[in-house]
Image (cartoon, rainbow, N blue to C red; front, side):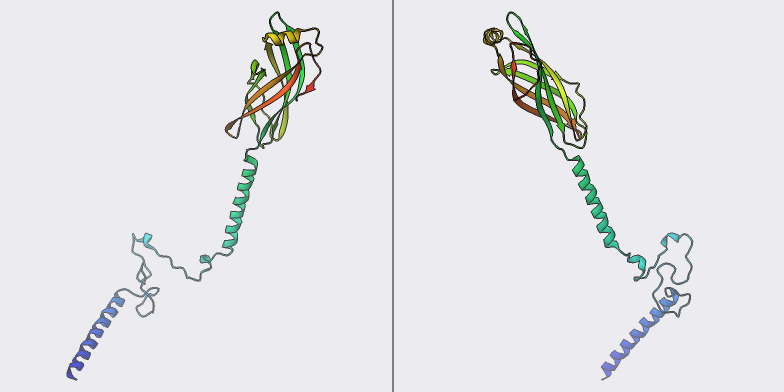
Length: 243
């Protein structure tokens, strides 16, 4: 019984000492939001409840905002975020739709004329062709270079290169007139074209066309192989379609 009593006395003394230290601390630092020592609350971290801030410590000001302040809970936040995302997605789709590369088509339309000149060992011809170029893009297409090659019996008889062709506007089609010079040196073809006993001197010619185009900061090459027939025995100025 005596031991228990002494322990209790020691515990009470210790609690009394801690309470006195707490009171002394509260007196040194007044409570937060008060100018006296008797108000209930927490100690102000900036001015310790005195309402005054020491000079040179202005950058240590602390702003206190209530948790239920409407400024901390903006209204329609989800609506604004969703609307912004939808607008960005719509703009991206529009950009992709208008800038997505589309096809540029090269099509031979017809043979406009064939002028034939005989020499002792060759047959010289000037062939004028009409070709169509279609641009399905929403941006203009610049033609960098156009090459056309004529082959007869797998032998190249003429080449033409053009570098000054104008650009094709967006979503449009343009026609170009291409004039090429052919020289037939094959003895058998020379006899065939110069023979007066044959009324129709038809040659089937292979055309290999290559076109380099530039648009949207990149370059592409288009190629087309086709066939057409021409009369190598006489001049022909009547247009006829290409087969």
